[in-house]
Image 1 (cartoon, rainbow, N blue to C red):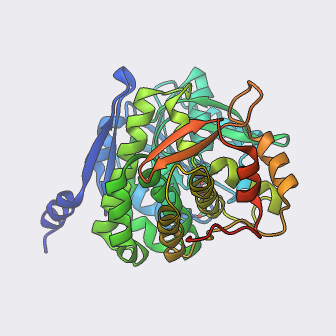
Image 2: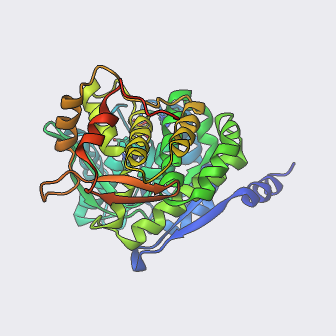
Image 3: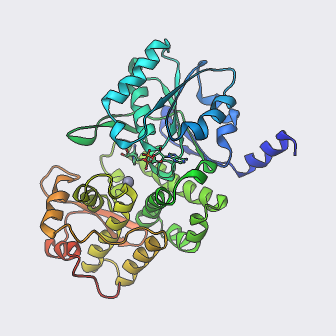
Length: 376
Ligand SMILES: NC(=O)c1ccc[n+]([C@@H]2O[C@H](COP(=O)([O-])OP(=O)(O)OC[C@H]3O[C@@H](n4cnc5c(N)ncnc54)[C@H](O)[C@@H]3O)[C@@H](O)[C@H]2O)c1
Ligand SMILES: [Zn+2]
């Protein structure tokens, strides 16, 4: 087949949605083969100076296709070490060093090629360099494609807290190439699926049902299923971010399962559970508490648990975290500063609300691994 025909065929599978933020609006392109599609990059790049920031794992897989596609630009690749432990100010400085050594000016563009770690760090570098330059997100993990690359939160970790140093800085476009997911390991894929389930659970009952019907297709990385799931997830996130860019209200709904999940991540020691795994167990706990309150049924909890289990995700917290320890850890993660613990809880599958009016005794029951809710 001629290459023009192949391009046409692939273009047919690309779907694009727009994140509507006035003059900071940008397109999110989703589909197979985007890395090699120069026409998607060109409108987002203002000058010939382009730095591709990636890491040691992703570079051997995807740096060459990106560099080849962008022939004609002055491309400088920067390959960083891989891992959350490198999401630091020290690594950020390496990006600034390279930008200054290469004499990059204010109209340059940074490309973030990798998972959420690379995306957050590159976005923050772009927010700071010369008081703000352009950047493009090319997320290569499922989690980054459905969550971290969209919405403009960027930053690095501090030894005293995760994501504590950062800025809001929106990318000029997002290229979510579903082909890159073929090299992702099963655990990372499942962690991304947890965030996808979150959108259905908090926002869209129809999408939750679609996930129940199509989980097997997602797990075998069927392109059409992936494109649909990523698109619907990005639509949900885009709608919430457009309404509340700086998280003063509705954006907090995106934390469904996360207060429980962060407690699990900290309680087990960072890195033992993947973030998405902890969020999966956290969503079951949010559903469990909602059912104990009588806001949803025990059958609803069973649906949440079963869907996550099918994705090989954990559906309960590790038993070694005691109830009191859990409560301590959750208090640290409080989403508000007015004293009370507020949680994202369910009114139904597909409808969530941030609320503090739950019964603390029922929360203790949810946190107690010995007290499994009957019927679920
Ligand atoms: N900005 C936001 O709104 C937001 C939202 C959620 C999460 N985050 C951040 O995102 C980060 C987590 O992102 P993540 O889950 O993508 O982790 P990650 O970036 O560490 O990627 C996971 C692993 O997969 C590797 N990898 C990436 N793409 C690959 C591919 N196509 N094939 C094979 N391996 C590949 C990475 O090198 C890494 O080893 C955290 O730092 C978190 O704080 C940010
Ligand atoms: Zn998350």
